[in-house]
Image (cartoon, rainbow, N blue to C red; front, top):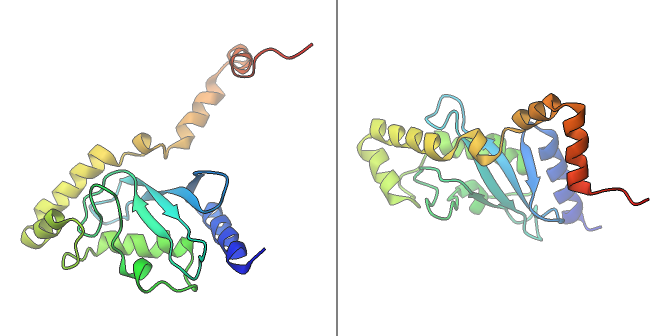
Length: 184
């Protein structure tokens, strides 16, 4: 196994063992979703975003590709594609960084300190520079409309409590419907 492949596996396992929900896209370890909570003390607080991560073959020597799946209102995120304009990820990436850094440092910093002078969303950048209170209100509206935990599938606790409430008979019958009858 090559060094980048080992590093990819190690970083992914480290991310999975942290507090982030990680959902693999396919059998490989190169594409996955991470559920990311908006930072405290920001207008993004309370929002949950499904972030698509794609690791290039040369990871960690080449930066991961990061994009928001559900909409977010931010000067440095393209509103339609979810692409992130993040200097650290796109230009100053180093193999010293790992996936946990992306979700614990880089993305929270991006949301806490937007850079309106290098926008992917010109409307958000202009509003931020013109009227910060209106900008923060728009961010909160987007959070309410597009970034609820239940809407992005980031609330697994709710599903597990429903499973526990099923009676034994309901549980048995649901197994048969899914798996079919056993062969004699």
